Length: 145
Image 1 (spheres, helix red, strand yellow):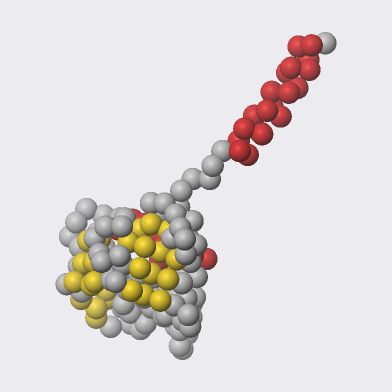
Image 2 (cartoon, helix red, strand yellow):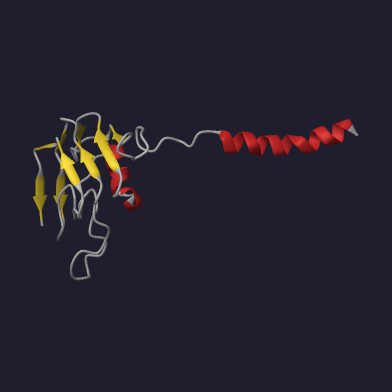
């Protein structure tokens, strides 16, 4: 009887342990609130931010310079804005989610950003009301559209 009880408790304990594990960190850290902004430390972090419109109203801080040189391994020439891009080139006007959060460059720079597209191009495709971009340097940027 005791073994049956123990065997039944194992799956319950496994679920409880799984639920109490911390969630994996998004980006290089942070929770997106002003007191604990998402930490962007790599090109991969920056691109991941651009692919997540649900985070466009959050707070972000760069923790390192970011080189987006398309000639580096994994590099790319973007065809739209990195953050808050227009998602429908065929429709008139901006179609997408504007960035309305806080983006603190923390004295760091983003370099070698290369974009060849049509409209709403740049690091940000659209910046909405309440957005704040500060302390950010851009260097060797080539935007064609």
